[in-house]
Length: 151
Image (cartoon, rainbow, N blue to C red; front, side, top):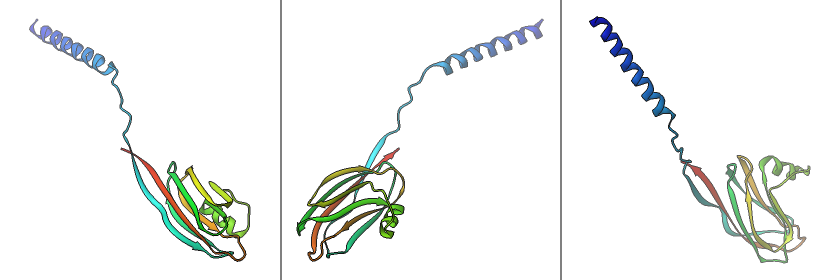
């Protein structure tokens, strides 16, 4: 009889433990979203000149969803012939004279402020092309990158 009482106590104890585990695991717990922090740095922040018929470029390895805040202004000359931002593949297509796509471009501009979101990880080019025949242009450009980091 004593042997059966021990078995009953063991079964009863295991049943209570099982019920406790079932109820404690079924409680809904709030899952907190990951923290996001931003990191900012300047890709470009300088004044530079571009002679007539030439271009100047800057490169940066960028990540998907990086945000680019672009300020460009003409300091000397009539207009900035053409400026654009493109990934490496499309920059090389532009150089080869093939059809290409860009994230941002402006033609015959004196500048402005723009915001662009990078679609994928790649090396990107910011190009200022002076399409004038004689005049050298002076340009101020600042491109600030905001990168979101999830912790």
